[in-house]
Length: 483
Image (cartoon, rainbow, N blue to C red):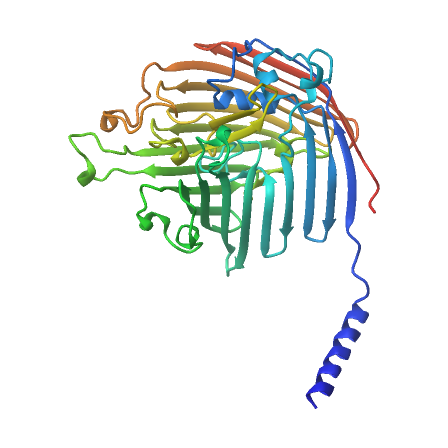
């Protein structure tokens, strides 16, 4: 009897599947992208790679890759992307002057010698309620140009992110959890002997209505130990784990308000440490208060359309927060960022809110390791005051931006001594020597079609650390028909 019932169930299931018909085929495309470019800069090549900074790695990844190729597949809400990018050897790029990314023009095999690809490779599912992303791509939290907790300072993050939307009577609630693998110990390899375990887990709850977005999140950086379920817990309170020797916890909160169509205001706040009155010792706490904030406003002066060119750079594949920011048109934006002196810092590199860089390079040692190559959040780092005014234009054929910035940077950066002996007095004010620079940036992308375009960018620094750079190039993308 049970066997007959089971057979009936199988038959009914078969009829239902047959009635539904065959599943639609996936859209699969192989693609090739090329971006030949000329580049000029006043920056002098480094003598060696012994004292690299986040600015060096940023300059390397701003320089366009000459060739990308890979595979893109889409099937309903699911997509898969794998992209190999061909770049110059990092050691060669930093210690020599590159006027072009064209291979073999002046730098033999080093001109295409980077073996640390891909920068983009992930699986994504974006359903009506459930979202999943796993692999390599940029992630960004917050409503501003730069995220203070998680931003796009690194070329990619090794991550697993899940999110679910809960409909409400007015608007919806959203819960998300993300795990980021930043570093791991290399006990059996001398070139990684200084590395330690470094993993980041974050959860966030947000609410969104037609005109308001509010989000509160918590990040837990677990270092020098293999994490357990206690550290990973999506629904715990990381601060209350009290694992100070192996854990660094940060609070993130953001809000965005659509005052009227085309006009939005927004802000973000992060807190790494907060000193309570009973925690001070002779006026100098062991770990000083460390905070950062952003306030901004954006006004769409008049409308336009979205840029039609295909995805070419790492940022085009980034997974960003939803926003009220309009697409297309002429947009005027002002943002003010402030990070305190000891934000992102800790006693050891593995405990800092930075990301390391491991890579194979064209040297006798073969390997290069930099512990603080990228900031997980704000790309200018701690001890910074930034005013940024920009005017952006976007239409189907043209995307352009003009940005004017005034940047003040304190003298105690991520490599400064921590904990400081005078943290109670120095935690907020910019510390000497303070450098001030006026920065003008311009960027243009013009599309002749979805596959062909040109681009140009330039920047000039005027002040205590003057400099200038410019890049011009052609971009072309070929993809096979869907199969």
